[in-house]
Length: 597
Image (cartoon, rainbow, N blue to C red; front, side, top):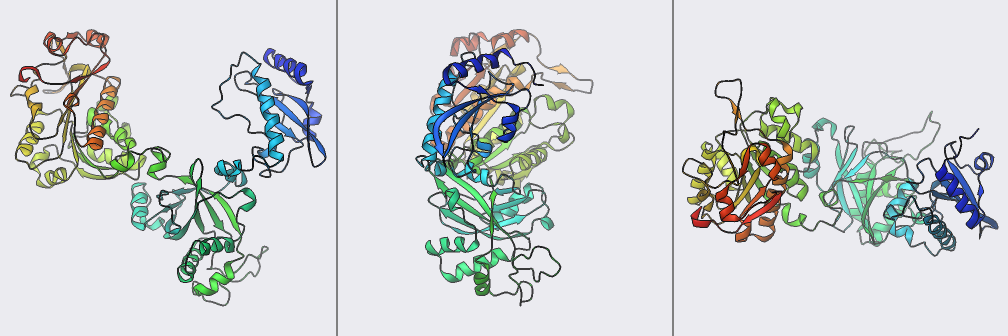
């Protein structure tokens, strides 16, 4: 027995009956139509004037228990086979509205628009008027045709258009992974934690199409792929070799990639072959699969013979996860990646400020880093550090490298695990080779060493100094572009900030139960605003090659309530020079340093 129908579903049924003479779908009819209808769901049938193959079509409006907050699904019955008409998915479900369509869940009048749109869609799609949508939504229809496939990833640069030979690794840990070069593939797998003996790298093919296939055009044999490459101008010898290399993979189902240009961007899919060229004989096997190696020793079939024997090899569609930087960091729309990808950044100091910059910089598009820190991550650091408990006891620089490799395997890291980096010539040389240097140590000795190297012109790259005031109530970001080092005008000779944003009557540090131990209390939330400000500054440096005077010194000023709750006030000297921060929670750009400070 069905559960009592809710008020929202009763209202929906009333609306559909009055407007379309819709009838409640019975359990018996749902079973006949092979339409799942759990007890908590309700569905109504609307007869239409549309016919297909001599049968009158009906629309089924199915509402789940999530109605009215989730709109009903629309099905067509009798339904056609999947992929015969666009927008008719598995089970006859119609893809009417995208998730971007807004509706008022408390006003059921939108149901009329939904039903009318569904009617128009069915009418047009069975007439072939929407067949171009097969191309626009190529990836969705490919996935519908191949719902369950093995795990395949592509690191390939799909902005490159030519069909070409590429590299592939068949692994247990990461599945099948493709890349444009063996060096790139090896590096990625190493950072991803795949040991060399499990990589099994070989060659494959990437086929580039300037127009998507429709479902009826999906290739069924390897011969169709060979014909595409011949039409693209591939000579016989390179073609024979690529096909032979593909078939010689020591895996039962070799895979290649297909790059597809659509009106909505680039898609990447794959196809697997039903066999390779290494097997011989079918004795004792129920399914007599094609044997390409008969008459030859394993792996000794000539390229020409392989090409002739392989034309009828069957193909199966494979879904591919794009893991190239262009896709993961902007779905091919992030134009800034081209400028940022080759920039090398040194980060000196990987505490709460420096470590928190790393994931933001990577997601902005930077992928080359030199990390410098000699400290060990302690349990009490976790509350405001990027790293988690699993890295406690490790060197901060090494732990950050490990975490970057785990989260972003394409990132390249050079490491220096020394606290006093300025004593190590190798580290200084690494830093000098960087395009941007971020000094986030919060240590006066380190900043002074950087000043000396810059004044000697040993370091000519932009230096971004960043530090926090007490309780992280203000975060400063200062850029030195030309060696003038106005930065040191902010401090006295011992490293005390001359004009802080905030002032406190009492000490802001807390003692620890250890000899000379102390710490500055603040949390991750206060820091997060400053992290964004600093990363934005670094991106501006790279994009413009210079920094305007009003961007040279930027300060994130925290909320006034935080300052007051920690026993502080706005510093009157700061207010006189740069204005009242009022309620705080703002970025202040210090255009010039008044009176040299």
